[in-house]
Image (cartoon, rainbow, N blue to C red; front, side, top):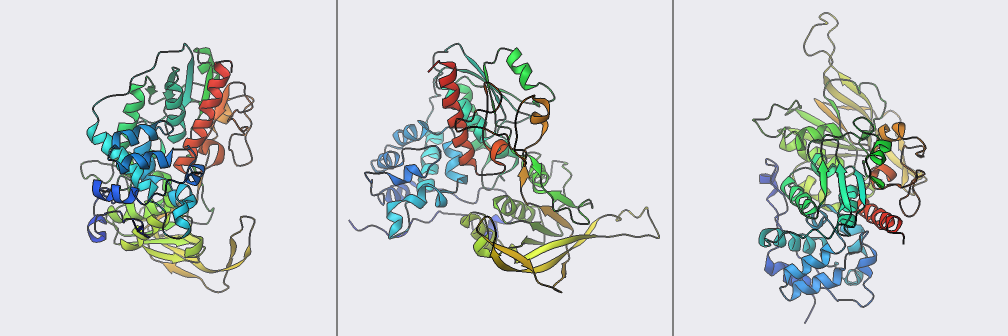
Length: 469
């Protein structure tokens, strides 16, 4: 049978429709499409795709189950190594991980591994009525700080081995960046809630509204009887450019902007969440978070949305699919442009003017690419005399985040690097005995799947430590 050289397209909402709603953009494969895509898999003996997956999902095996229509069997195979299959199938950058290693991709387009994972997880969630059974307790207690992807993965892996795991979450809803950072149109919150409920069925306790470093300290967790602690608190401290005007009204970090929309549901008319709606918006940055912020602003009613990025389209770090969706929806990409000042309205004759201090524009300079920098990317260089102004009412800064220093500042002997990331060894162990860490709290802002991989590594090391292996 001849192999289809192209990956089956993902059905989506039409751009002119989805740009005005928060429903999921990608609609998912049908059974027919899923089976046809699965049949493109060569079932390679050396399984190179698995080496590209940070949690080592048995990819050819679960795809083989799809070929025969055994979707539940496929789900069980994925679940052996992944605690969040419905999430990973939606937001992981498969094109640079498992799919980049696909043998079929040498000559043709690679197998749509992520799309098949999503199909399997969605089929399970729609058709399975059996909750997972909690294993026999082994008598050990572990605390997990943060309920993002690294924390949930660590908790799930340990719970499957009989550990009593408590997850401490600073916000009122479990999920971390999955609920406050990624918009509903990319990752429906009901999907995250379903994954969390699966972990609870395994015996994981989730304690919301607990800020480790304020409500409790790491030392107090040990005093409460926890024998090991995993820190997966993420990177929630936003970075800014330190240019004039960043304190004006209408300037947000992407974290704040997305949290107000995603977690506080600013997009619902019945919710009185303070957020700028309408007008013209500039989002500074070129990563996935910048795409999320720009597309969210559009759905909140912005008449014009710009992405301002200092490099070219080739250097844009966001996923190709997210960039394509943003372009289809009408986002204006101002590439090779760099902000130098945020402008605001000021009426010196009337200091009490209610419009004083509001954003009126963003001054930028044009850039060109010079020699490669330390990262290997060509360094952007300012073009002299190229200043221009974009008339905008809102500016969203999306230039990265750093780990919050709260845990470091309240935990004696916990070593961090110059960026604030917790220093760990290859097993996720920190400089404190029995304290492990992983995900963005270690690396700074990275991908969901890499955070999950770190949680899995730490869970294995914690098990080996507490079981005496």
